[in-house]
Every structure is written in structure tokens, then in C-alpha cells.
Length: 362
Image (cartoon, rainbow, N blue to C red; front, side, top):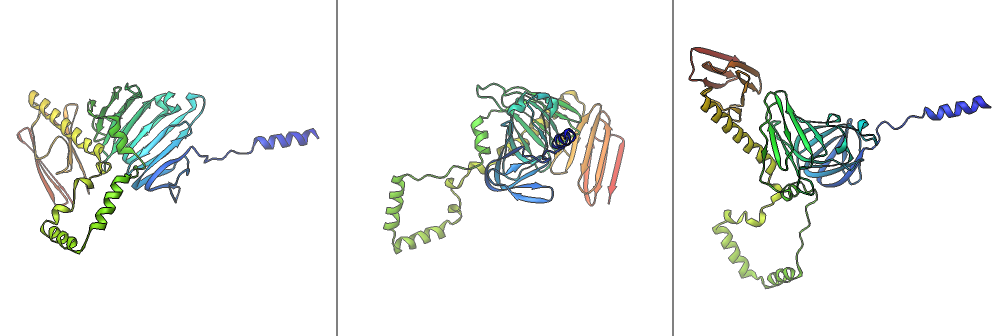
């Protein structure tokens, strides 16, 4: 009898827990959004359970997720994020979070996870790694993989925490409200932090999931009704004549502007790139170190060439159909001819000098 009882107890201990337990759920959704789990695509609906390794994507839509520790993740249109790992434990040392942010714009507000060590939180983008502690922030990744991170304030207007943004070439710390940095390439240092002149309201308006319904007052409704009743055939003919006179001018008006359609954070990426490029060029001109003709420092969208300083070298890298990378001493002069599948580029470093480099890629 005793043996039988022990066997029953032992069997109960061996009952496995669910492997893919819910770690959160969809708390708001607008438009088109989906959760990809293994090989299955699931429409994102309210209260849909979220699990580790889920791939959450939006098309013409927005979504909000809430995790077990009350952390909130909001995604705008055309965004994709993979939840690599989520572990929430009452013991902070055992809690973990790992996200892989592929594209779009997201806002992450930490709940209880904000109290755990930064080493236990890993958020990756194509060009950067982000370590956070007790933080409210936004991340934007464009189609080129460039990353913009903005630290947001807490309810008292102070920094909501601290963010460490890293690439292969260095790292920066964000610890002030609205402080931001960009990373354009893994092989390039994050830009020096800058404080943006924006408001939390602007960020919230961009990341609102369900746009507010338009409300028409009773007075406006009466006026609209009276206008319809007063309309006659003559008015229609006059209106048609007016439309024919200036149809293009009537196609778009101020009423057609939707502020939610403006991808403000993506625009900031281009602003940061331009500021960084100007700062680098000013430093180089002051020191007389480097003159570059035929492409620009940083990522040049026209040539698709990334140019950056690495120690005592200047690096030129291009990866489209083919891959090419030059590491040259920045104090020397070079004339470079690059033929990449029929696309030809002439680049001069420090007035050319005596070194001639020709690269032909089929």
C-alpha cells in the first residue's frame, strides 16, 4: 500500500508543465496585424495570447501587447518584432527578456522587468543592441536597418531609466529625457546622444493604436442637413463647372491631412544622419585629415556606399548585389574606380595622390 502511494505521488511530480504558456496578450489592435507562430499565421485579435518565439507583424495597422509583468509594447504600421524569450519571476535575477526588432516603430514601457539587471534584457535591431533598466523608450528601424532610440521621461518629467546602445564599434548611454542616438551600421559607432525638442504627446499621438472616432456635434449635423435640403440641380451644375476649372486644387485640402500618417520618427533618422555627417566633415576639415569626393561620409543613399573612420583608417563598404570593402589609411591619397555590376563610381580621397585602385565586380 505504501509503495502504491509513493508511485502515485512520484507520478504527480513528473506531470510536465505547458511548454508554450502565454506570456501576455493583445490588449489593443487596429487595422491589419498578425502573430506568426511556427508555420501558422494568426490574425491578431483582442485577448489573443502571446507566447515566446512569436513573430508579431503589422501591415496597415497597429497593435498593443501587454506582458505578464505589465510591460507594454506598441507597434505602428509595417513593423515586425520577434519575442525570442520572456521569463517573469518574482526573483528579479531569474527574469529575462529578449526581443528582435526587425523594422518599424515601437514603444516599450517596462513593468516589473524594469527592476532586473540590464544584462538580463536583450533587445536587438539589425544594427544595434539595446540594454535597458526601468525604461520607457521608442525604437525605430527603417528599411536600411538604421536604428533610432529615444529615451522618454517618466510621469515626473525625469529620465525613466537608462539605455545602453551598442554596435560593434562602440556604445553610448542615454540617461536624460528625450535623449536620442542613431546607429546606421553595425561597423560604426552610435551617434553622440542629442536631446530632441519634442513632447511625449507627439510620441503618444504617433503610437496611438485605435484612432479616436470623429464626433460630429448636433449643431454641425443640423447645418449639414440644411445644406443637403437646399441643394438643387442648378447648384450641381455650378459645382461641376467649378471642379472643371481647378480640379487639381480640390483634390487635397487641409482636412485631408492625417498627422498619424506622418512617420516623424523615421524622418528623424535622416535628420540625425545629416547632423552626424556635417559634424564629421567639420572635424575632418578642421584637422585637415580627410577630403572625400564622389560619395559622402556615413551612408550615401545615392551611391549606396557607407564611409566611416575606424582608428587610423577610412573604410568604404558597399553591399547591394555584390560586396566590396576597402580599408585605407586616412592620411594617404587614393583614386578609386568601382564598377559594381555595371554601376560605376569614381571616388577620390585626399585629392587622389599616387595610389590608383580599380575594382570590377560582375
